[in-house]
Amino acid sequence: MPSGADVLELGAGYCDFSNNVVARSRVAMDLRPEFAAFAVQGVRTEVGDCRDLSRFDDASVDLVFASNLLEHLDLAANGDLVQHVRRVLRPGGRLVLVQPNYRLRPREYFDDYTHVTVFSDRSLPDFLAAQGMTVEHVKARFLPFTMKSRLSFGHLLVPLYLRLPYRPLAGQMLVVASND
Image 1 (cartoon, one colour):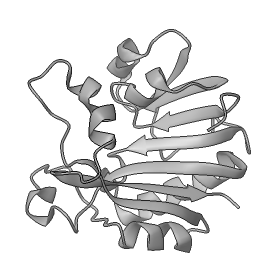
Image 2 (cartoon, one colour; image 1 turned 90 degrees about the vertical axis):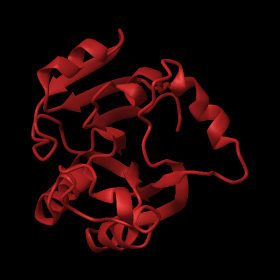
Image 3 (cartoon, helix red, strand yellow; image 1 turned 60 degrees about the vertical axis):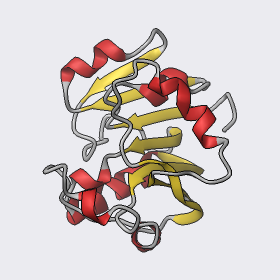
């Protein structure tokens, strides 16, 4: 991603992505108002429902990022969300998703009672293509199924984990799609 990009993070939570990405502009959006306390200087925060991106202009964003978001929305809401994302993305802009991969962790997937939609590294690309996106990259084994840890420095281990040739405990996928 070029450093001159305009980035929008949906379901930002602790703003892990927005706080660390190098971009011209960084906007983090979450439903919970308290999330704004996690944003570092230079990250604009927007409190709101990710299914309503009307506050953003058409073709105003180069990259939309969401981690562990789609599984909390029903299929119709996911379809609406992707259409809103397509509207705000510039031509050639990208949607980058990190999602639990049901195919890799079916037994644990519904341990989180808020998971309502199932996606795998096969079904999510198909879903995005059906919404008019062009799927560019799928990595079935990207991150561990959960990043919850008692280690306060656990986030520092992620770059090391991503360098491993084989990723034990992987249960989350990475999917990149463009708005062509």
